[in-house]
Every structure is written in structure tokens, then in C-alpha cells.
Length: 114
Length: 118
Image 1 (cartoon, chains in turn purple, orange):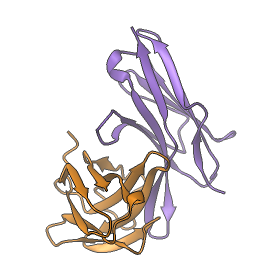
Image 2 (image 1 turned 180 degrees about the horizontal axis):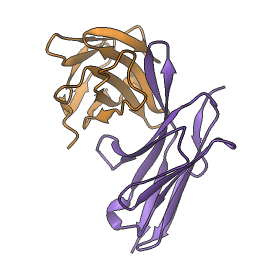
Image 3 (image 1 turned 60 degrees about the vertical axis):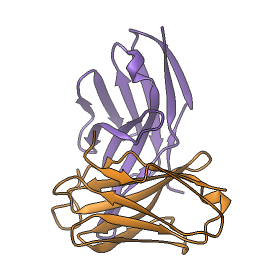
Image 4 (image 1 turned 90 degrees about the horizontal axis):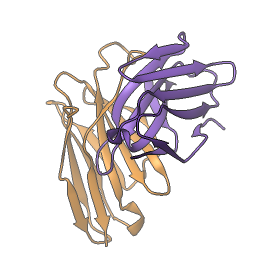
């Protein structure tokens, strides 16, 4: 069936190192992807997005890579900081009739070690 | 702060009861979405409203209903509550100014309402 999933449920990195969070999707018709960050007790926060006609997009300390051939998405966080500790979700945004629906992956818990 | 507000922040009630959750979207956003987040199910899309009308339905139970008012705020009504309805309920909003929603119609989430059914 159609799904958006994450390879690893948890990831621990040393402060200052780079983090890479991976996500797989199965719907080849998906045309827009978003990464969200959710801190404990808060709502998901938009980090960065990418359209399917792009392979890479950079933000402030974050980069999203899209490999449509293998239906894989990754989020890279440079110089990871304690404030980056959170659950990260990839989400697939695709047309559903006249609307667009967001389907979330299961999330990866990122822990930044001092 | 995303600009989306939700009330109440916490809600504790008993099985069989009915509750109403409220959401105010970001200024100018026409679409409102409701999601349920539980430990074993992750973030599940429930329903979307666009400018007062239902636009899309996800995994929403018949005991649940929603509406969007002329001022664009939305309410999610949960009735005949069961223990399994305990979860975080999030509202999100997006501009959706083009017909059908733009391809980059990013959703911005509120802080959520934590519902506990005892």
C-alpha cells in the first residue's frame, strides 16, 4: 500500500556533528515533501520542503535531498545543536481529488549528546 | 509560534462524554486540517475544511465531526468518547488560495489539545 516511512526510529549524535535522517516513500506520484520537527509537548514545526522537480534544497543549517529513483528523502542537519533534539517527521503531500493531503511517516527521535 | 491557536490546551473527561476542540487558523489561511496523534498511531489526518466547506476526509470516526465557521475558525466535536480517543489533537492551517490547493500549500500546526478520557 501507499506509505511514508522512516528507516530509523532513533538517532543519537554528538553536539557539533552532522545529522542525517532518512525517509522512504512508496507513492511515485507524490510531488511535494515536507520535513517537520516536533518538540515534546508542541505541535509539528515546518522545517523545509522540496518539490519533486528538485533534487536538493538548502535552508539554514538544513538540507533536504530527494532521490526519486529509489523514492528516498533525507534531512541533513549541520552542526547539530542541543535544541535540535526532537522527533522529525517526513510528510508526503499529494493530490487527493480536489484537495491535497499530508501523510506523515512514523518519525525519528533525534537526541543530541553533549 | 505558528500563528495557529488551539483551545483548550488540556481536556480531561469521562467515557461517553462529548467535547469540542477549537482552532483559529493563521490570518488569511482558508484551509483548516485536523489531526490525531496517539502513541501507537502517529499523526493521522482526520478532516480538512476549506473556506467553510469540507474538502477532504481521512481516518475520522463517525463519532467525530467538525465544522468551519464564516470567520474561518474551526471546531472538532468528539462524542461518545472512549478510552482509545485519548490523544493529542492538532489543528493546522494553510493558505490554499488557488483552486484545489497549491502544490506547495504548506500546513502550519497549532500547539495541540491533549485529550484524556478516563
